[in-house]
Every structure is written in C-alpha cells, then in structure tokens.
Length: 163
Image (cartoon, rainbow, N blue to C red; front, side, top):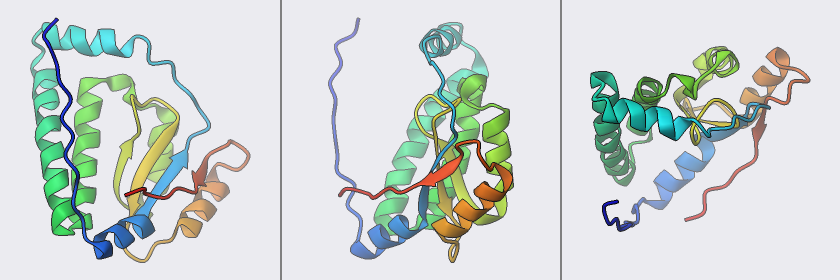
C-alpha cells in the first residue's frame, strides 16, 4: 500500500474552554457491544465503488474535523456541538450500521438536554458522546436515562479530559 505517516497537532484551548467542555461533556454507555469486523470492508467497498454519498461524507468528515479544532481553539463549544451533530449525520451516510434502534431511542430521549451528539468509535453500540446544553448537568442526564432505560445498563459514565 501507500506509505503513511501519522501527524499529531495539539489543540490549544483556554482553561475556560476546557472547564466548559468538562462540564458539558458526557459519555453514555449503551449496554451494548458491536463487532465491527465487517465495517471496514463495507466502508472501503463503498469508497472503491465510488458511491457519491459515501465519498462526499468521507471527504466532509475531514473538513469537519478541522472545523472542530478551529472552534475549540476559539472557545466556541456550542459550534463544536453543532459540528458533532453534522459529523453524526455524515457517519450514518458512511455506515448505516453505525446506529441502531437503541442508539436512536437514547438520543431522542435526551434531545432536550443535548446540544451535540456522536457515537464513539465505529458505532452500533458501546459509548455515545454528547455535549449538553448550558445549564444541564450529568445528574439530570443520568436521571432521565434511568427513568426511561431502567435496568438496561444505559448510564452516564464518569469521565475526565486529560490535557
């Protein structure tokens, strides 16, 4: 294959932005796991097959990542949340299996609490990430999920950004 090299650039954010992001970010466990063994084959197959929606989404995801960095460095957490939503829509174009009924139900049940959402990893299970609206707490999110998904394993996990 083509020789590849990894380039890493640090995202420089202010202490105020870091604090806001820490307060507004939540990680939600779905109680499910998905084996993504066929994911790469499917995504690459659509790419090699020149499927327009897939090609557009893959290219757009790269642009959105650069915009996310830009907005974080500007301290604009609300625009980062909007970009997460857009990324989520693009991800579903790349792989329709990145979501399922439970994920859709979780996101719908907390829509009034969240400004942005995206599935972690390949999707289809595991963890969801959200940026909550200003003033919403993880405890409010946890209570809502507990009311609707009691006993299912769906829960908000404690997490901290390491910077």
